[in-house]
Image (cartoon, rainbow, N blue to C red; front, side, top):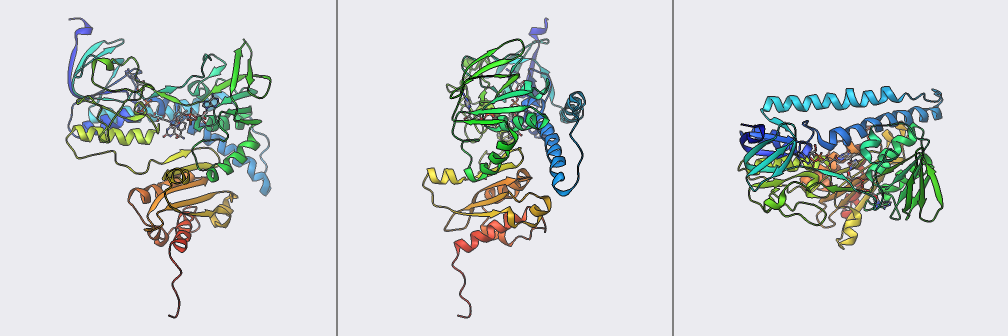
Length: 470
Ligand code: FAD
Ligand code: NAD
């Protein structure tokens, strides 16, 4: 028998070991199903652990510490200019953060009896997979879960290269370029632009639309836009790259509305594309749209009864926590549970400084769908905790149904917004009323009081004041 003849029979074959894939596999194994994960890299973690959420947040933490060290000058404490050594910084990110977490995931897989097979998986019909790579083999499955994630979108006509980076290369921190062009004012452009600008690059950002983070409520974006204006060298909104020519030592870039400018490196972050090409889906009944997105229902079922799909490959929002929840749902549905991805709130967090976070209905969505809502904003200028942090520029808002007071959405901008949004997500998910949040005791002085304060103003707005002495 040659290696390629090896056939494994399993209950569940998961393709892709990112947050969607490993969450699905761990849950399936927990529910007693024999499960394998096939990943091209033979390791768990996916884009999130190796080239996304985790390394970017490690670097953003360092940027935040540097920013704080600079800010304490205002109160009379001076550290002097930072001396940056890239090698230890890179080693800390890779060895102490990413590798440590990867070991943890590998340990969980071992304990749950989930085998991780290295190689590229290609479907050969609705019940079989071929694994290509060093140890080619066939897998016959009762169910498969596709969790192959996404990859960076290209700028039309522009090739990647040593000086034209995607986010993966930028996170490797090849150096701190003197002049960095960031194309795209979304999550990655703002997060990684912040890292590089704090480490010392002169960052120019080009964004196609007329504002940063298109789609996010403007009152949340404003405080970040002010910070970015001060931190970056230039922000060009409503513009795009017309031509780009990389030479051995720099990149000449023509930006719409301005002439040709030289940069040392360019980071392209104009969105991500579902990764479904080359999977052999034409041998199955799985349906894929023109952007490669796999169509699923609320149980993560594709149009092929034995194949499920979760995570970025199923489209927006391309966020790790959505992938993880979908992964659990897919495994539970396969195991016969009445599970569904019926979540109302998928929180989103941009980990800049200030952070921006939102969940549920946004004001923009409400306007676009003509849905009547009541909105209450609590400005952090009135927060004791924000004052002690020297960060009174934040804002917490709640969006509620005007008749029932049910909390439909929330938005926060300020340091720690990513943590604060959890309470709002719980409120939206559990159909809490503004009254519930207003009456819950929040510890003082904390930023979480801003949620309670916003709920209290919502109540004033929702109810006529009770007449006294009547
Ligand atoms: P992925 O994590 O992309 O994993 C897919 C896996 O499938 C990969 O390991 C790949 O090797 C494997 N694979 C693909 N094709 C095959 C095949 N044919 N055979 C075998 N294996 C295959 N999200 C957040 O929620 N918070 C953040 O802070 C955040 N920060 C980010 C920062 C950056 C720079 C980037 C790029 C993304 C960030 N994201 C963040 C998004 C997050 O990384 C993704 O939403 C998440 O990783 C999606 O998980 P997934 O399981 O769908 O796929
Ligand atoms: P994005 O969709 O967040 O932002 C892309 C930006 O590029 C948009 O503002 C868009 O208008 C702009 N753009 C598009 N074409 C352009 C062009 N030709 N010239 C200039 N600007 C152009 O995408 P991203 O920043 O690449 O991130 C990809 C995805 O990864 C995100 O949507 C998100 O799902 C995920 N992510 C999440 C986090 C997080 O949760 N904190 C962090 C990073 C990435």
